[in-house]
Amino acid sequence: MINKFIISPPFGSYISHKNATSVVGTYTYVPRSGKAIQALKTLRYTELGWVNKIGLKNPGIKSIKLWDMSKIYSISGIIDYITWHGMLEYIPSEIMVEMNLSCPNVKDAELVNDWVITRYCKTFPITILKISPLSTISDIKYYYELGAQYFHISNTLPTERGGLSGRELQKYTLPLIEQAKNYFSNIKIIGGGGIYTSDDLRRYSDAGSDYFSLATVWFTPWRALKLLNQQ
Image (cartoon, rainbow, N blue to C red; front, side, top):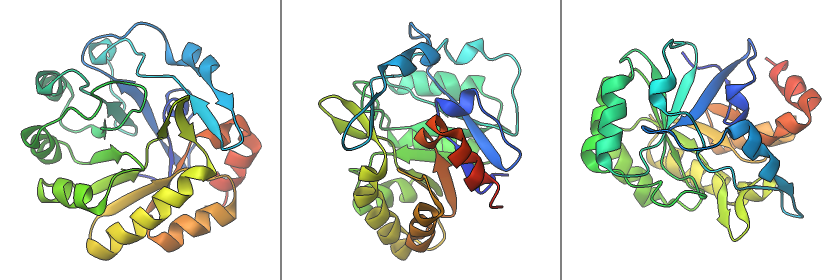
């Protein structure tokens, strides 16, 4: 069961709220040096929004010994399909997962094959595909035909300085969400990118979002709480 609001990584690893579902991670099969909380120091505010070079620093999926069924676990293979298979074997089948297919700060983050997506979608009660803002309706159609029903639109935008977050994303996310919903009325979409106010929520809702992802708004937590308390 997913709440209307999603608290996206890295914030979801540290923040919980009764009106939101936290996404923890992102985890990889093997540890990647550094801690996400330290990597937050790489965040910089620019004229277009927040830019980060956080990457996927984490202790590895096998560091998790106790699973919380109320949370979504963000995962990424990044090396090859074998690492996706390893996580599939380790994660309990009743857990909700988000496949991070588009981290702009990690080479080969999209390295995944048809078999992997189909198996994940069949194994877990909810499998979310977090895709790039540069994705197309053809990409969504491809994933849909493999069994995907949940899409997170979108990850950060790749730039020379890192992954860009903020309202700049809306010029990419809103048209893609609207197009996807018109094409596949039965899919579920988590809309995200520059949600700071009720007007932003309305734009995402009008485009067809079923859920709403909150991330950099947590740098001004009073704004985030105001949104969450609208429930």
